[in-house]
Length: 161
Image 1 (cartoon, rainbow, N blue to C red):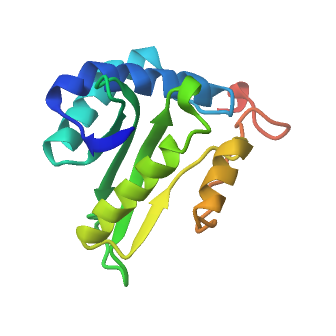
Image 2: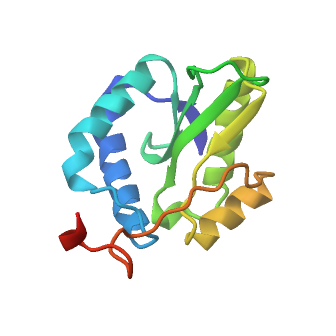
């Protein structure tokens, strides 16, 4: 397995993988629709590919078994660190547990470091214990916690709005 920069010709495969990722994240409470966001994700992937912000794990047959998207942040606010962000990391189910995700993550971190990032941030669904465990093994710790509740509760209803 070799980690290489993604190419424009990889976009359809990568978009399909993102759809699979999004389908899987629904089990952990993600609100993203998978199939209906394919076009937007393909466009985002194309932008990331154009700036070398997507790495893929390829086997000796040149088949892609995983990918990672990343970028150096350019937020609106001045900060005391330059923040890199990993926005998606996916490995096909039959290759999980073989170190593919670790290699993709490490390669993205190296690219972010070379681009001037001091820290790397990412998101993982709170209920995705295996994902959280994977990132903890790689040194990631909570930095900011996002909280959510349904507006449909004891004190609010649609009739009240």
